[in-house]
Length: 492
Image (cartoon, rainbow, N blue to C red; front, side, top):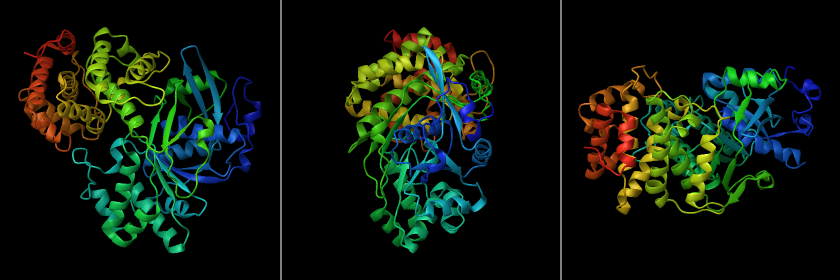
């Protein structure tokens, strides 16, 4: 059955469909970056909220600033912005159709339609999933990259910007001039202090062309921090076929694990939906939740994904079935990351490690090591290097984290241990590969990567351990290096 509003009543009985009249929804949120994660996470929370009968003036309008966003718009528009969400529980799969998105802004050069929609007074929240590396923040200094060509363009062309942040600034300027008031900017990306980072990007860009207007944004807009969590694989032929097995012809289905978490700082300048009614946690401080998730889950993902990629292991669940990689995950998480992570309501660090161990091992989640290893130049400084800094500051062990960093360098060398080539898997892949090949003979070269290690590169015990591990990895391989670490040894 082709997915559309008209076919909802004809779908198989085991498919949960929206329990509300979608024609009565009105938009209140513009979301930039309509990828799988958004559709499995934030969009689902709104969908379930509408099913309670509440807050139906907070429907989502999709948006984007890149060519792939236009392709997603085309696919979703053809099926009335509906899509199938398939939960991959180890005890059995289930499917539901999500109806919380009611429109998708045309993607255009200069972002005129997006700016107009965000300037509409009905828009009270603008949310984003634009990836960890999409905020124009230097990972080493955490400062806004005002010299990036995209940012320089937007500052010089504020009415026809290229970036999401330029579009936000342009929309807020129209609202200020029209007396319409501000909106809330809510990042849903995996960044510690993601709201603070979004504020920094928006205000800094505005200040480049209009300092007085930047002051207005700071005084009137809010940018809550949030922590988001759900493992959501990419959609390919297998996922399209899985939707068909449920009896649905869907051009954009999404699969996800049987776990979600959303912790949001309760700081909304123009109102908000009652997301606490459907399981989100509204808090005055999300820092500890963020830190636990980013360091232990996202950091551990980097531990296992790059190791698996070098060994030719295709999926995350298969890395957890590999005794050496599993052992590396447990030891690094327990001994080198968890000691610097505080407990949160509901989880101690040890309990959280046990939870993510089960989640990573779920064989129904066909999440590839390649996807998780993507964009290491953003994810390593975002998820791994902060734990190294914590360990250095506390005088605690960092030998395993040095090994993890060396494994990333070995991965960027561009060849697996079986001799097969690693296809480019980072926006900076060509540069990383050049540096990794030089580092094979001179490991210190890698630590000089601009914008990655910063002061960590100057810490002699870390630099020495990194050099030893990288030499061992090239000489004897990943398994031998992990065995050495698990036996309590150090690289010779």
